Amino acid sequence: MIRTLHGRLALALVVWLGATSITFAIISVAATRRHMAAVNQELHADVASHLVEEQILLQEGRINEAGLEHIFHMMMVVNPGIEIYLLTPSGRILAYSAPPGKVKASRIDLTPIRRFLDGPGRLPLEGDDPRAPGQRRPFSAAVIGSREEPEGYLYVVLGGERYTAVLERVAMSRILEQGFGAGFGVLILGALAGVLTFGLMTRRLRRLRRAMLSFESSGFTAPPPLKPWPRGGDELDDVRATFERLAGAMSARLGEARSADDLRRELVANVSHDLRTPLATLNAYLETLLLKDGSFGSDERKRYLGAAHRHGLFLGDLVGRLFELAELEAKQITPEPEPFSPGELLQDVAQKFEPAAQAREVLMELDIAASTPFVAGDLSLVERVLDNLIDNALRHTPAGGRVILAARPGPSGAELSVRDTGCGIPQSSLPFIFDRHYRESTGTPQERPGGLGLAIANHIVELHGSQLLVSSEPGTGSSFFFELPSA
Image 1 (tube, rainbow, N blue to C red):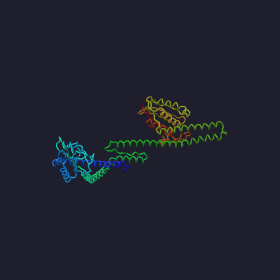
Image 2: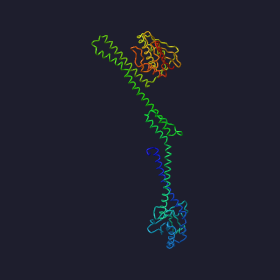
Image 3: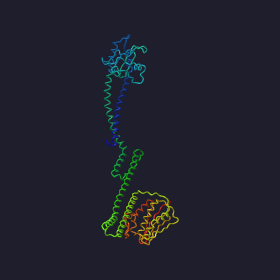
Image 4: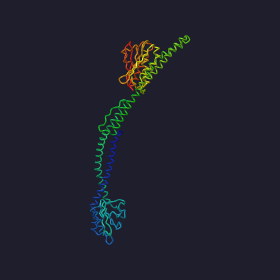
């Protein structure tokens, strides 16, 4: 328990209460002593003057031995705690009632005596203790003779050695009897109150600790919700809010890291899967050339080399598409929108694909409405979308067919589309054509594996806040279209 904050606070409270109790006891003893000294001095303030009036202590500068002995004897019987000293006008001790050898001082400071004779004021007023030089005791004093020409002073120490010993013994006994019980009770009540109070004060810290342990046990993926304290707004609420923000950010970062790791794993798996067949074909052509090089004629050798070259180009294009798709899925590509004319872009793309279309005997057409507005988008990425759609349309459109590039005003900008008069897409395949693993079976020997072009085009359109849509009928062709916002 001592290792917890609650236990340490409770222990600190107990120690503090113990130190406070001891300090209070010391102060109480000192205050009690001063109070008893003041009461004693108040009660016996006139003792010295009564003794001077009772007996003649000095006669013509000489000590009245009989009178002094009578006073000593009487005071020892009445109050043995009183000590009597006969002083000269200069403060030198002439006689005393203490046993021989007990008095250590030979002179008494007269300043406190004169203050007492002028009126003691606030009590206790303490003077020298002849038995213990350096210590102070309450006293009573009287002048012998007149104040103007004193013959001497009678100095009565009210708290003598015996009185002090008795007072110490009685006082310590009462302190041990009452103070120990009171102090022990205060410690018990203080400790209970401290445990309860600090338990309530550290309740939110314990909740926060449990939440942190739960967050750690979840693998830092599920930040636990913490309810705000109803009377919060202090430092602990700030710590709670900071922990929730940090936990949320950490979970998000870990999720992104795991997602990126999954994407890397998937990319490696896809690359190994998609490249296996074309690599095997390429190796087969090359091995045939190596094994039968001497038996091949020049035309047949060129045919094999051309096939190997085409498969090499195909592999390079496939690897580039795989990495481009991986970057798009990892959100490592950010569009940089700029205003441009959709009609001009379609014309440029059509010119770029015109040789390929002529080689396939496919007619490229443009259908651009004059009212088509300028749009905002990343020009290079949008061109990449059109490239993939046109390439896909050309591969699935037979000789004599058409590929139409169109642009016309849309609800919030301009709609761009690529239509073809090819074989079309079965209705059962439409929901899957944007899947990177989709392979459309057309029966043609040049079909591309994986559906990477359409998957890349779909991701780019989504980066622009739009959606790539498709409509198709088998045997009549397909139409892909998307919308870009006006600039």
